[in-house]
Image: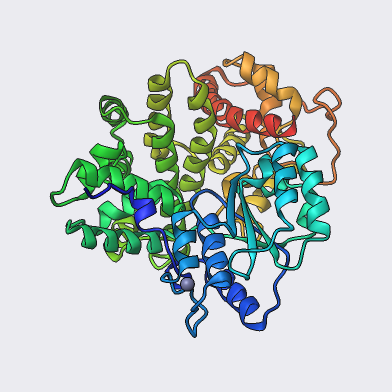
Length: 497
Ligand SMILES: [Zn+2]
């Protein structure tokens, strides 16, 4: 009977050269073996599925192997190698720190540490999730770490290195494992698919890799689910339906709808997400990734670094990126980052998602704040009155010559609104004429040296009655300004808290 093995175990690397994406660490470990300059303790940290225990195990094998290769790889044939692979070696002892976290467990280690090894080589303790040990257990371990017997080595693995006591850390050589790039994960999945005799297209594998977020083990278990489900040709649609992710089409269609001003598409897309039973928070995260990619490509072109995309994808993203200005993409990213938290705790995720999609879809109708401020200033001059005579020319100058490097982020350059206005803007959507005068002053960039602690302390500005014929135009524009600026004020005040 052939035993079914999950992919992550079946394809677990057994030699250094099979370890993905950790070349520098592998080189350092091999060097240590070669020059015989070994530390007593090593600590491997990194997010889940990046290969910490795998690396520790290969290192242990290489140290105890009876016939290592010239390249210092373990042979995987000798008794020691085979025992370690099967997890029944008497010299290489693996301990799960999560379930053996007490002082008694560590005392047992301390008691056995002095016994000779069966192979005559090293006695190696691999403690996984070492941060889970209790403080007492750490202290007991410390005693052994301070004066370990000559042939004893400790290999620790942890996802949360900040929880490991500094006294322990200072006695270890530390390695931080990188997240594995999507590119490498895709290559590995491709190899697995070939060995399984399954045809899988690149976009499909990329979806799996993206979902695993740099964790190879996660990618392998996800792919395992897919292979269990189908042995036919695997494409992006199949993966999307099995793993509950969205293909990129939905994001590109959102871009097109935004450009066309088809705001109703927000409901259609939200419905697709819901009727497919997708996780909403995950969808918003994918959407954030989409807009990050668009911004990167918009700013640096389709060969932008930090992107794991095929050539075809880069071309598709480039086309979509051209539909937005960098300011619009930044604003959308702001929406998304804000919305992710809100949606997570929203009692009605569907409505929250619809609202988010609508905000994105009306991005092209949105007047940038700097344009709005300029228009208000012009309007104020038309209706007569407003600024002290020396403030107006300054504003003109500011608008004509933007500060250096401001072209990408003009929106962010708006001066922070005064705290007092927060209440009047949020509580009263239809401001009175007096309010208008004050909020208008706030919206306009003030000359820097003028200190302005509160609105009441502001220098008096002569108020001119507004021509009733122009009142409604004025109201509409100010209402827009209030809506636009409210978001800024709220964000500002939540940062200050
Ligand atoms: Zn061997």
